[in-house]
Image (cartoon, rainbow, N blue to C red):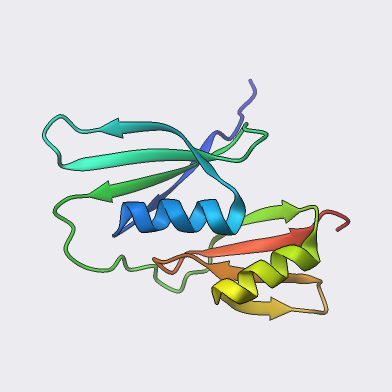
Length: 123
């Protein structure tokens, strides 16, 4: 028996803002979308150019508050081929929330506060 990861879900308050963020910050593009017939939710799957794994963004019409991320001790990690250029982009976007120079990594946070680890390809 073999299992293969296919997606991670994040619930978001402003779907279009999140889609723009993930496109600009990480180059993720919309792969598919599910619209509830009654308008109660929209699910958008984003993926990188090479596919294989998707980030599922879920917007719930009636959710009226920020999502409670607890201690936010979870994250997705992304390997980047040009670490310096990625760092410059994220610095300009103002989304770097933590850096660990000793480990050679840093984290960005999305508009809802989810953390995303950025790792150089040579690590």
